[in-house]
Image (cartoon, rainbow, N blue to C red; front, side):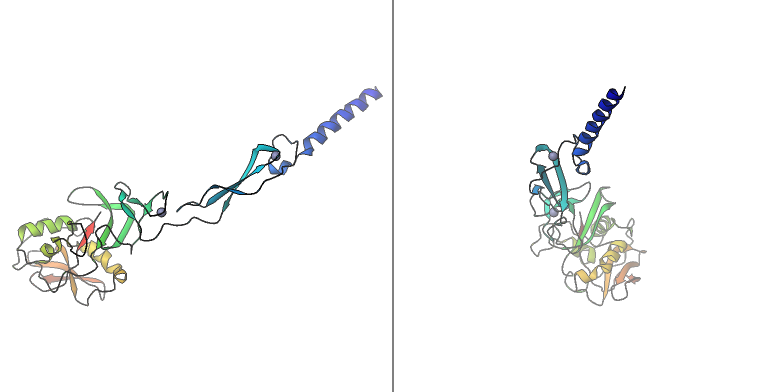
Length: 264
Ligand SMILES: [Zn+2]
Ligand SMILES: [Zn+2]
């Protein structure tokens, strides 16, 4: 009896020693050794959106590995968006960094038309002429030259709207109807400062307000009223005074300034 007890005690003591031999805190599944870690090495380099991941391997068993995150993501290279990679559904574009997973361009960046982006959101907004979603608005760096009327003669232009996404349709409606001396027609002319886009338009009331809120990105708006493409009635259209940021109703044959924008 006593002898069998001794054997059992010894047996369990050995089991206990085996179980506690390894370094259980480092995750060794077999519990048979203390890991001998090699040097940390880069597993995946840092990208625009992800930090570098490093890995080290146990010299006693190469299946034992540890990883850690080091530093922070690199961030996109500002103002280097490749517009050829634009994903229309999300507004994602890749920056100049190799392997860039893509992102949303920022306000203040140069747009594909050579303007300055003043609106950039992943959610986007609906263009009322095509029903497609746009994510960005860019404005020309300069006003169209000098004062301009909304219309030479006051005519009703049915169908204009004030919402984000309606400026391009508004402009087409005005351009098709009005004489060619007005603000909308002036904005339709391709912006010729090296730009290649021909789809510039006069912003709607809400688009103009977005531009007003981001006017510091441009730094060259005048202290005069700016036309929107949103008609109030046959006589008047909405303008915005960028000095106080408020919209005003102005007779269409008045002289105001205009800034062309485009959506994409
Ligand atoms: Zn190990
Ligand atoms: Zn990037």
